[in-house]
Length: 369
Image (cartoon, rainbow, N blue to C red; front, side, top):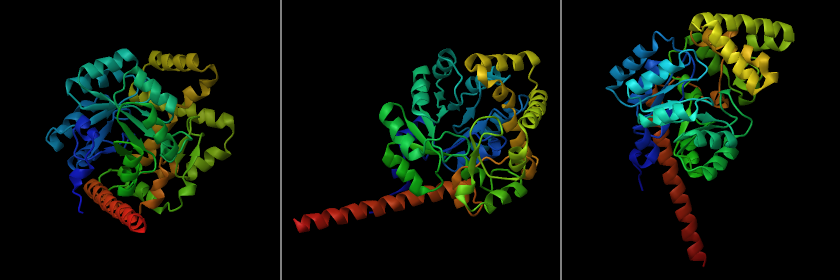
């Protein structure tokens, strides 16, 4: 029996308005209009990285995606601690974007406003309790990221977290962390997910716009065990490819790391136009939520500034390179179209093989009986 690519369609496709249940995540400094458009035109669903696109450019990026895709559906990522968070919310509604993604932060009122505008609210979480809280706040779809994923990640593997969440919630679940091919898509669907979300796989494409010198570092990484989690960048667990900068942080004293963090925080404040009042408000909110977390609040700006060095400036030795463990399994830079069509084709092939295997086993059992 031959399966068509349309057989891979799930209810998530109807919810997001895409052809295939494959989501491109909003990687900072990477997920701009070009990558989102390439993903969308290939049949996937892309999220713009609103957290790292300058406030005076974000609307132009939204309009650019619409132009490049013929006004096909796509999404926008944001964080409530951003100084222009309200601008992003207004733009999502004004331009009738299909979905928004976020971490913890938006309250019920904000989420209610988005949902009233017909926007799918699809946060990313790394723990069952966070998934349940997000849905309580109003999310109507959810992405779970297992520990194999890149960037900020939890410690629970996808194969443990995914069935936990699928069994506990009644909204569409998208699986992230460790996915890069059709076998992963089929496995996620077998667990009960309605699709997969990928960051590293889309970063490592010819459409990502990441400087060649940085992509060469990614392609040269062939050992998944070396793509480890570190707390040194902003005090939170982040999975990254080891490099000279991380080695320096490991050897640095706590005082030096804090001094670096303060310097980067000031750069981020200046670059984003964040007012001192807003910055102090973010710090105060962090202190209220966790009084022992002042240093981490100061360090929060480290990640975007250090990612910018690698993903924009082309200086991977001086920044950080977020990556899921699947980076070690990707050996070439295909286009988004090649990646998505390849995933769908392989998923169809593997499902045919699985059906054939189970049918053969059933026939053998019947004959033996």
